[in-house]
Every structure is written in structure tokens, then in C-alpha cells.
Length: 116
Image (tube, rainbow, N blue to C red; front, side, top):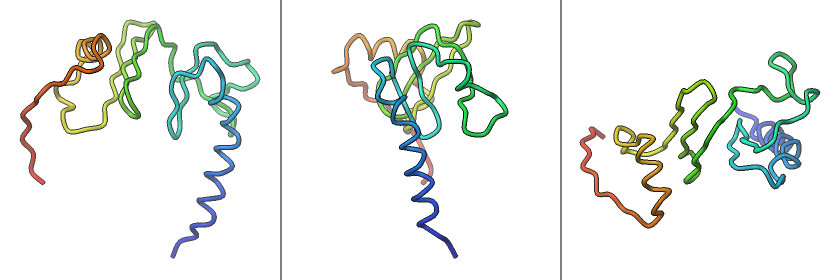
């Protein structure tokens, strides 16, 4: 048993709530549960415990956003976060992101082995 109308209503409300942030000129990337902005939000919108407020996960020094679910973040504490949806996850590095950003038409042929 499922109530599709409830999940559709919740998703619609979330999109309405997120629209002012997604439509900002400094919005670099957004996904279902995250948003990356160039400028900080006001303190009254951020909380790690209050429901309905944003949680500040990290402060990004540099970011490369190539496609949905494909990005690299260099954080202020010298850590790197790489997210890439696809089969070739093992070859995706920060150098790969920089190489692709320099030439967006660049194509690599990668051999992979997977059991489906």
C-alpha cells in the first residue's frame, strides 16, 4: 500500500520552498536535498537541529559542477569531495574534473568490468 499523492504533495511543497534559493543568481548547483550558493544565507535560515531550515554541511573554496550528480568540491579544510554518478567512478579524480573543465568536448574511452 502506498499513498502517491502524499509524496507528490511533499515534493511539491519542497520545490515551492526551495524556489527562491534555486532562482538566485549565485546558485551554482542544486539537487534533491542540497544547494550550493556563492554567498552565505542569513543566520535565521540555518540550523542543524530545526526542521525546515538549512544545514550548513561545508564551506567550499572551489567547486566544479559538470552535470547533475557530477561535481567536485575543494573545501576550506583542504578536503576534497567528489560525487559522480556513473560506471567509471574509479577513474574520476580531482585532476579528471579539472581536465574536463578545461576542454568540455574531451572524451575518454574507459574500459570497465562489471557483473550485471
